[in-house]
Length: 262
Length: 257
Image (cartoon, chains in turn yellow, green):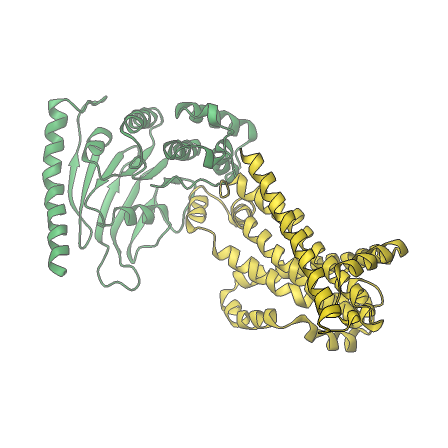
């Protein structure tokens, strides 16, 4: 029963995207060839996007671009996690300092990461490190906020029980607080990853010579709107894939074990 | 170990009324004490103070001659809610406290088996917390507390959420553990029957502010039976004290409305 339902759901989802692509092709055709709303080269179409995909795949450029982007995103994300976890713990240890710093952190979090690009280029030049800088600045604040708020969400009872069972500070953190915050931390990291991915694209458009963001930019430079559209779709699909297959999987596993997810 | 409360008062921040007022009490080594009283009379506050989870506003509490400054494994607390850790299995929950105080793995294993069998949960030892019922959670929590083998056990209405049968069974178990080990047990309950069944000494608290209204020695021979005439008469006796208190609280609440 359940299985047939999921298969049916998948068929519906597939059908939706087939119709969506058909609709896109139709709009393109009507706009470019019937009503003349736009020039054929100014609007991507499914067929052109597919050709562009095959072309870049054959040249091997797309795979290299994806690998480069992934590598940068991972590195930036890793740096963010390491520094962010330390800062997040610092903030929850010292609430007074934390309260002073928190508005600044949420301010920076809402700042579009492209704003960091001029600084990055000025400070690091057109190098990998400037891209990493932008990625870190774009994602670190959500790590800090996630760590801090996950400590706050631990039920006081967990701590009381541990204390009356004789836990010292080290045991309290190792056996109670860290496992307790884990699901929230994972969902925070999930958000941080998506921020890192977005920041990376801004940085690559401005300052890279290889990578998905650069492919986007070079598509624009060559007035190849289909390449731009194709790269956009690749960026979206990769974002979804990481979210679903990495973060969602870990999160669900943790929650299921705790009975917080049926 | 003995527990001595001298002139203990507690006022919570932001409230004018004293929750507990000038409580003095000697709990001797190996005594089984039950505290009864209307809800909101400060029973749990008293337990939290002895546990070291809260500090008295004035007065001192000492355990075995040393002043209580914080919680510790010599005064294990069993709370009204099971408060198990959902990422651990039943047996992992039970072993955690022993891990905290550095008990060897073999001994952890042995005690966990002993007490989990006692509460009839050995077959469920590898279950996740969310897979067992509320009563089973509470029994797990009891096993976790007993595994610590502390000299003092503080219990805050531990059986109030359980069904009658389980409650009776666990009361029996608790009395036999107490008589075997000579632990000091400080037990809060709202059930007079439970207090008469378990305690050597029953303390009736009154409300507004929380003070000791009456201390009743309970010399009924053990094992006790709730149908015995002596049991019933002591129960009635106590009920009259508590009822006065409950009536008073209700009247106060009514008057202030």
